[in-house]
Length: 482
Image (tube, rainbow, N blue to C red; front, top):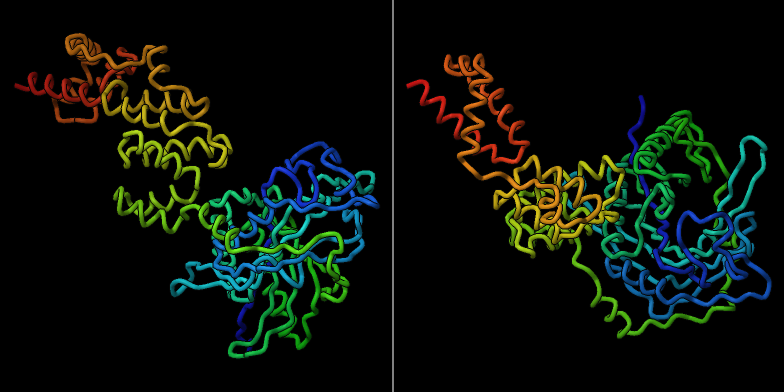
């Protein structure tokens, strides 16, 4: 009879901070440059070069710490973590072991049974390594040092998660918080957010932790979920055979759906940490912390409460709009420009999200202004254009090019025709051209009226109010019935 096990998970989440320059030099952090073009003697590890700390890295690290309820270390220091690997040009990494910038925090997630706090052991600053590129044809390996020296924070949780669902909820909460702070774009597919997952299992009711493994190479939430489920099953099979789990680092292959061992898990002494002799301690004053606190944004949970009170939107709308800082800014800007909150919400929830998916765009890449969205909403409310034309204007003018919708409508002659006499003439023509449909409607087949409506809209080139068309057609049908 198989035993029941409890899953114990802790995460080490690496986040690339979106400063313009690297942590210890002036090289660009821009993603996607030609190999080895964002490199200087400092980030290439040349002898005699000296690091100079980028203060903005510390600012962003503290802002993340404050947002995750951490204590800020008032006297923080950097250490050298020594290891030899081709993508590590100095043969050591500048990191923080003894005095990390943030400690003892937590974030609250929604879990089965309600809210749950996931404790954060620490957040420390460090530099990223370079990138190895393997050529499967020639079997050569190339090194790109563009990423070397890009600023990272590593967020180390306590082993408080008990399922893949809790892990994903925790990561989503971290990503949302950091994106609201504009500290990183947290794109897993580009490596600006990476998670190493520490997994162990123990018999239900046991107080003692099992032997953990660390899983790497996880670049999507889907991969993280699959990896956790696979590793839990692997460890269960080992224990059921009476064998012992080996503490090791494993690499997850998402295409094959398997993991394999990389190396035995190192301890701190294996890295021979010592204080970095080239960098002075960071003294964080009360004034510095208060300055950063004053710049902290309103986060999603706070926005959700305010949107409910101020705008009375449905919970689903609020959750979707506040899921992105950019969408929230557009929403509030459009409402501030005089547009109806629910109508603005509808444009964001339906057409905006449809086009974002179609064009493979993240919310932070949206170009259009809140003012132009408000103008579009008002054009529809004033019955200058109908909904069908409005969708065309939004896609072709507002969404793609942030053009003034008033100008686009005027330049393309899209204003609705309000001459009721001209509309009545077209409706008479529609009745003459669709005699079978008219006969069906008179005999109680109401759906047949669609042919008449379609004829009118085509003749008017869509520049009329569908509600007015339907009203006039209904009036004419009633007249003919009598």
